Length: 235
Image (cartoon, rainbow, N blue to C red; front, side, top):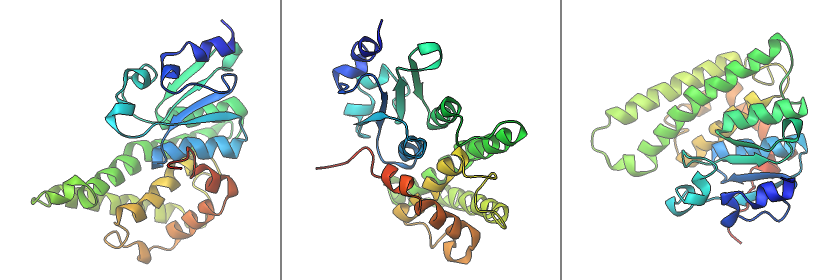
């Protein structure tokens, strides 16, 4: 089966058809997890086609989307030009970042330094993302209506602790793990999300020094600015 047929025949293409089936197909929405992938694609200079998949159940729980990601969450990706010319289907933002870094030989060093990057990537996947996201739920979204504030306090305290870990680690460093890497692309979008959640003040953001400067460095990158706007939402 040739590349074009591989993409065109995939069930997801019935809802999100590929105009350029010979390039990477990226399915996402500009959430912190979604922009990790678009930023990485921009930083790496890879040719790709973005598809807007909203967070509505009509999109992420559709038969078409779950044919690619049975977990029903963005982001997801198909690379028709994977190893040995085989198509690769991926979901989970961390797995996608690792794949793209290994595909290009960029944004992740070799040898022992590779595992420094990976441990901080897992720090985001297992800690920063889930804890910041839960805090956002209890502050900005439906959880804010819950009278019992113990769940919110739990996530607030854990988010503060994680910020403290980053603040200490970033002293004397420009980036999380040596050179700029997928670890930064994983972590920094979640720091940016604290503004959207309206949680910076309660987390003592203004008392931090290294984390805000780190986020500023990240957001100053042209590829980051491009990636934050992909896929395009609205007209």
